[in-house]
Each structure stands twice: as structure tokens, then as C-alpha cells.
Image 1 (spheres, rainbow, N blue to C red):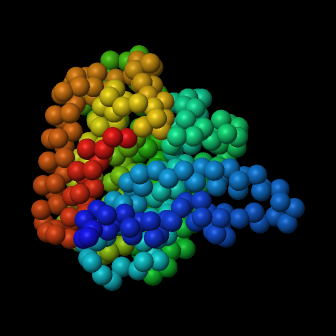
Image 2 (image 1 turned 60 degrees about the vertical axis):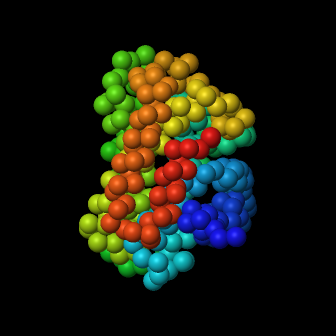
Length: 306
């Protein structure tokens, strides 16, 4: 049976990340370097955080963008290192997002959040350590130039920082009991969720030596699909159940935070997700069949059930 472009992408991602736990266990940069084992517990917590398989959207986007630019010539070892880096940053963000001072969620990916399985201090330190390790992975990535690494580090740092994910999380916290409008909600999610999605696409493109025009098209695709991803999250928070989601549902409603559903209504939010999907696909027209993996991924992200 012939595999779809998305199935082939997922197979490649799985080859790079058979499981994030295995990658960490075999990663010298994550092992306890002290002979007395003083940080062994931290490694156990890291393995716990990385053991639950998520959707792996960001590594899929990274590999999809590289394949959209070129079907050959990109080092598998380089893509493996950078894919792990982007997923590790995402996992760190989830660990911190679940903390009582943030979104205060007890469940993540169908099991207790890290601070519930261990403690808050350990969760904070694991997140800090994973973020730092991500940049080390890029710095040590084989078969890509120093110039490419510097560009990747700058893009990822910006996406994960105050102008990206951290800034978006701060805005999200401040949105409790606010009358945030649609444009402000979009800006917040472009930072909190979209920035890392766009960075994933950029890193894949840079690894494949994409032109400025190709990077711009990938970035615009990322803007649209990043917003669509959050719109669908808000829809699922209303329509799905906790067993399927793997996390507590209704958190934003309980905290009186604005969502796409509260601002547009359920049908309006679904219409907006479809509109954003169509816009994202238009941005890939210049790539031809090489971007079919990204096209399939965009459709999956809008039609998913978790």
C-alpha cells in the first residue's frame, strides 16, 4: 500500500525520534556527569517528560519544510538533531505551562503533569535544562555550516523568548477576566503558539538551504496554520473529552479567558479554521508536489480530534 506524503513524513520523524525518552537516555548531554549520582533524579524527571508521545507537529513541520525545498542533499543526522531541539523546546514550554503559577493543569498527554508526578521545583529545573539542551543540540548538529547554526539559534531564541512564546504566555495570563478582542487574541496566539511553528518551518528551510522567497512562503504558511491550530484547540476544548485530549478541558472557560469560540461562536470558529487552512495551502503553490507533506499536515491539524 502506497504511503501518503504525511505518512512518509511521520515515518521519517519516527526514525529520528523513535521515542523522546530513548533519545534522552542515549544522549550524553543529558546524562548525569557526576560520579556520586547527585543529579540522577533530574534525569529520571527528564525521561518522564520526554516519554509521552505527542503529535510531534513541530518536527513534522521542520522535516516537511526541508523536503519541500529539496528531496535530497539534507543530512539525516542534521535533521535529527534539529528536530529533537525543536521538540525539546516545545516540551519545556508544556512543563512550565502546566505549573500552578501558569495554567495550573494536572494532566498532560494523558498522564500527570511533571510537577504532579515529581514537584514544582523539579518541573521548573527540567524545563530550564531542556531549553538549554535544545540550543546545544543545534550547536553540535553535524553537516550544517556555522552560519546556518547561528541563523537557527537566533530564530529559535526569538520564537521561544519574550517576542514569541514567553511573551504570548504572559499575555495569556493577563487575559483572565479581560475583554480581549479578536485581533489581540490572534496576536497573542501568533506569539504563544505560532512563533514556534514558524520557527520549525524556518529551521527546516535553512537546513535545506532555502532561498529567501521560499523561506517567506514557508513563514506565511506557518502564520496561517499556527492560528488554525489554536482555533481548532479552542473548538476541541468545547467538543472533545478529556480522555481524547489527554488534558483537562474547559480550562480557559473556567478562567474566563477569551477564545475563538467565545468570540466567534462554535460555527464561526470552524469557519475561521477552514479559512486559515485554505490560506495556508495557497502559500505552498510555488513548491509543487514537494510540499504535499506540508499540505497533508495542514489538513490533519484542522481536522484532528485531539
